[in-house]
Image 1 (tube, one colour):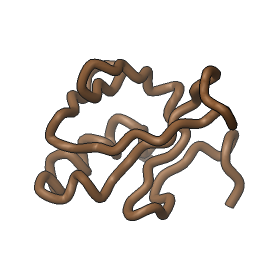
Image 2 (cartoon, rainbow, N blue to C red):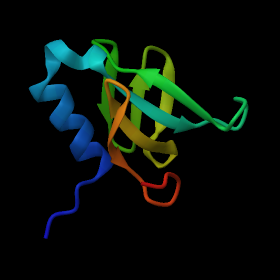
Image 3 (cartoon, rainbow, N blue to C red):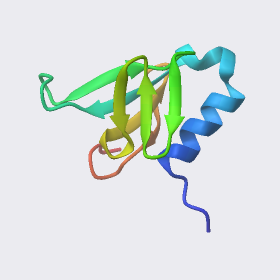
Image 4 (cartoon, helix red, strand yellow):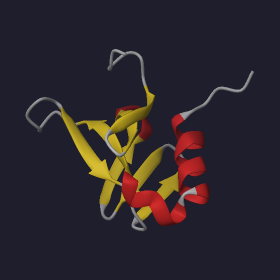
Amino acid sequence: MRVNTIRNELNKIYWSKGSELSRYSVLVIDRLCEGGLREYRLGSNIKILNGMLVIDDTVIPFHRIVAILRDGEVIWRRDVYLKK
């Protein structure tokens, strides 16, 4: 059985939803942010690399991404961080 990894999910969004990328965002662990989580919008400015997502000049390791949202609704999440 194939595991749906964060990289697979981001690639699926990037390659199939190119014009709709602005509807998507990622929720990331950020220890400097109040509440511990920060949301980054996706767009044409992203690069999906091995082990990391780059948005503009911000490098986000995959292990810090806890959820992917579409129009504010969670479509992918790590069970460890977010409850249903």
